[in-house]
Length: 107
Image (cartoon, rainbow, N blue to C red; front, side, top):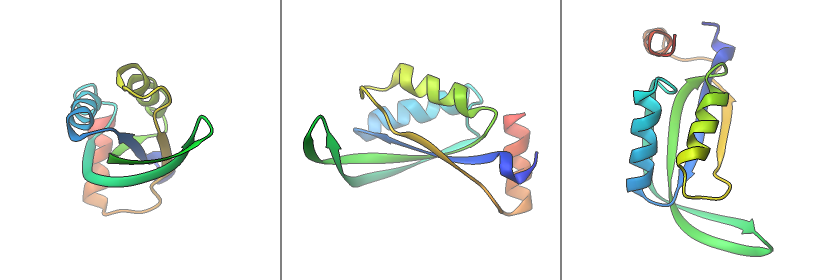
């Protein structure tokens, strides 16, 4: 798999329980090779004309460009937020052994 097709996907969730549920589903359904859960981030954002200041968790999923549409759709179907954050960025480089492992999971 060319490096440009590998993706890091960022997803926020309101708490660790929902984050773990999302992460386990994405991995079980082969939409992500791995998902890290970073607890207790602070998000400040504009929502419906108001500045919000909330504690959240951040999911860092390793996936591919080909799987991203299904991953984003699955997150939207399971997430408690009206508009969940699901954004991706390409993986440009990484350890070859890890990238090979990812590719094997995501094929």
